[in-house]
Image (cartoon, rainbow, N blue to C red; front, side):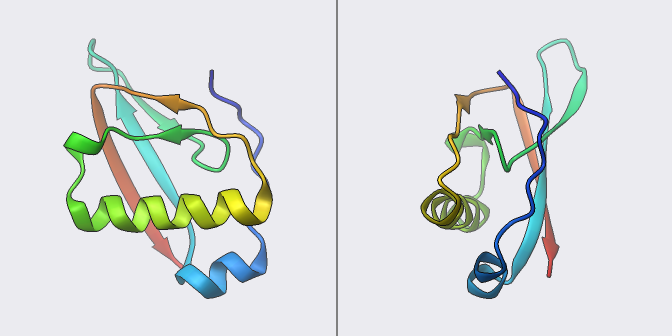
Length: 87
């Protein structure tokens, strides 16, 4: 289940991570590409991410969880691409 609400991240998250937001794209088995809202959906597959990007992603999401108390829904898709956007 993907939620499409897009809350603004708290200012302290921006200061802690130096990341304003990032986008996650996932590709289904049939080849269709989608953009996922990572503020409401925890979407990634560990084996498909480099350890550096995975670490940044998990750190950001764990801070977001602690400070925003958002529910995150684990979902696994075929291909994951993360685009980081600096603050």
